[in-house]
Length: 324
View 1 (tube, one colour):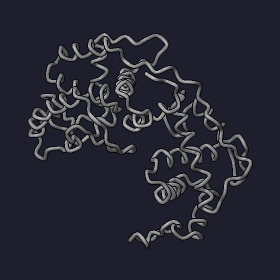
View 2 (cartoon, one colour):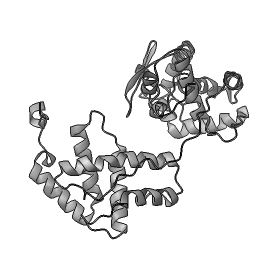
View 3 (cartoon, one colour):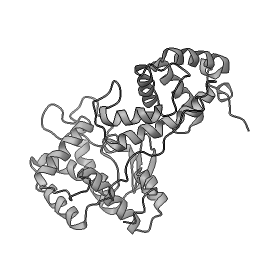
């Protein structure tokens, strides 16, 4: 069966739904390296062809287009190694118009993966990439072996969480620790949770990787214990926020969503308070090691690697030979 047209799904047609019109719009944008139009066009392609379109793709395409303009390239006269050269320069100097480099290899690798959509997008738009343009293989070096927190390290952190000062942060700190170290979320995913996402023994995780994740007994106990305090904090705002994690600070922000920067600050302060010592030669980020602790727990419980990668969003688990 062919692809359904928007009108068949009850949706209004847009210029992107007419082959000749999108060919004209994209062609003109390529001639002048119009980042905004090309970002909009590639997003239009993704929402029509992907169940879960990646929002990183338009940004990566825009940055590559800006780089091509800065190099003086004219469409379609691109060189075979342009994409690789763009990524290598970004690694050392940062993306054009973005933060200055050097960038971490995983950041560059994510841009490389996003740019693989250029080929089908431009075919769809009627302007295929020149055949000489190469899509480079993975450029990042082999990552360090994962380093999950040991049981002893986890227990030591948990004891320190019960001693953390000021005391009003302790319940929220414990929630963050279990969301990362027992459930396997990122900080960004944790702060985006709503109260209604807590569904008994399961947690609904929204965002780019929508999924349902089972809760360990400890995670369930800590999260359920947080809810009465969360309701108390929510009452400090004229219109209570739906978020699961609310700020417990006695200052003006009490009852507002914690936010990603607030979560990073709390984890940083707790890391210093707990005297956390990273292992030499391993990734030092505590949040990263907590997530790998959750992965190890799932694997030890006998869950398939594919299911664990889905629950935690840690896709690299399928590329590693790591068994926990």
